[in-house]
Length: 190
Image (tube, rainbow, N blue to C red; front, side):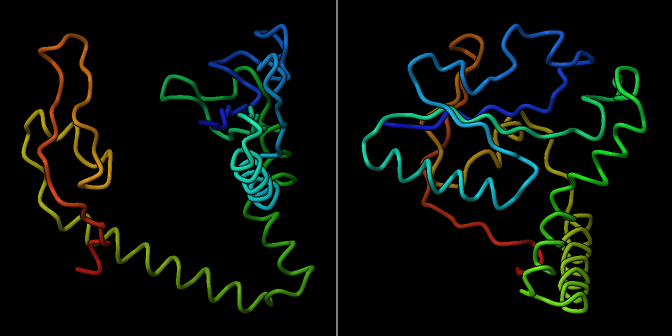
């Protein structure tokens, strides 16, 4: 069965630029005999087009593809990585002001007259209100029971889980109970 290998490339590993850590930074070429594509992961429409192309390519039985999504991470990797020891604040600000995916899509929507500035503000306001309702509902929920099973919940849609998740040793395997497929609803919709 054909599949796509999708590799994120945010230009920096844990504190080291890709150019310093990799002999070949064109990751999409690392598939040897598997063709690859380099995709601007900061462009929503480029990602959509690449996924549509890959889906059709694989459906036609041409084999797998390797995708390299070139992105930029504004923050550090973790709490111990501020993200500013190996790059300047000016670089981060420049990337945010010139390559932000949300601002880029908004600009295209306005240029192509798909929606007006007022319509986009209304959509944004409704989205923020929806998020606020969801957050309020989530915060009102009781904390889950402190059982090992909590670690394995909400990984799959209920009813679509594999038979088990493998642990370090067989005794640590987690076996899912058999249950009907349940399409989750938002807490705010219940």
